[in-house]
Length: 452
Ligand code: PLZ
Image 1 (cartoon, rainbow, N blue to C red):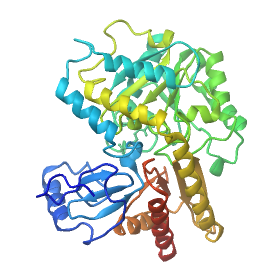
Image 2 (cartoon, helix red, strand yellow):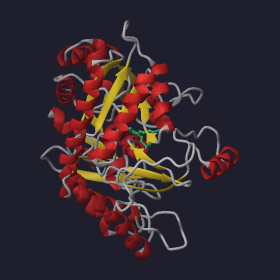
Image 3 (cartoon, protein in one colour):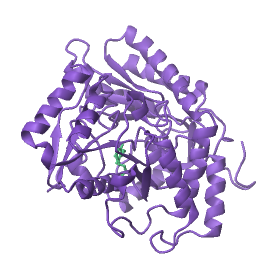
């Protein structure tokens, strides 16, 4: 284990961190507790946290807190540090760029790394057609801009989003997001011309992909009308909504209908993108080529960066000066993205995501064989979830889910929940985690489940 300097007991982050779960205090320990007490006084209480620690280092598959507790990371933030926290290539690229120039505003004086990221996104996103890209700061901002572009391109206003969808916390993206608590309650009024239809949730709706698509398309045609519709936006695998994988045939039918009706199909790959699902983009798993793709999270290993990439003729619809923002495509974030993309492409991370998926589904499948409270196990690659239900009725069991997550947190495993019904535990480990830590995290989960 490398230390920052001889006088410090804080370890340096990155892959040299000792890859071990080690709990040396109760959680939070005294140093974290003191910082969290200051947080309670200084930070708006709307900004909550799930792991009661204060972080000093992270890397590989662990996060280390101020008291020296080493925690297993099964969240990667929220699907962000996919290449591994403090990845050496990313850390070096960020340091080098910070020493060169930190900002010029791309709309004032452009620089090459933004163009490099745009070219990489144009090359990597699905579809063998001419593409263009614009860069922003967050997933929500990318989604907002994708909608702006689609409206300008079509001259239409309506947008369709889906049940269980999540697209962000800004005003337009709150309107697109389905779940009221905690994302929307009390924060309205929301942006107009946003309509919601049911998608495909095979475990709960029992429909084939074709049936679910027909249901959605009929509602769109009857209640909105294709002529009014600018865009349909969907996550190929719904993230916050519960890692819902649509039935085969659903997404391609919706894409085909959009194409026939001049509607822009937007795949929100903010959570699913960049090797997470065992493909560079989840759209590939379903064989679809979206008109526009939104990206963020994994793209820059934790630096704030987001993109909208898609068909050149759609992307070019906005007038000169119509797209932008002070920080969008910040040079340090672009340097991080280029290093991260290098790692995704050249360090076997897509394959690693698939292996992680194998470990997760095998272990969780074995748990389900003897425990009917694990109602459904689903996802792709290193994006896997379990939906917990009442063993008799199949009703969502949010209380059990919360209890299991709480027990894992107390044992030093960073675990995330999700789902419209709050009854899903999701696994989003960094792709740099080793099998030993991953299995140890699952052992902790199994014990928590036995006791719950
Ligand atoms: N689209 C598909 O998953 C962010 C939300 C965390 P930002 N998901 C994590 C929280 O509780 O705020 C997300 C997403 C999809 C858009 C977004 C929004 O991305 O970078 O958080 O704005």
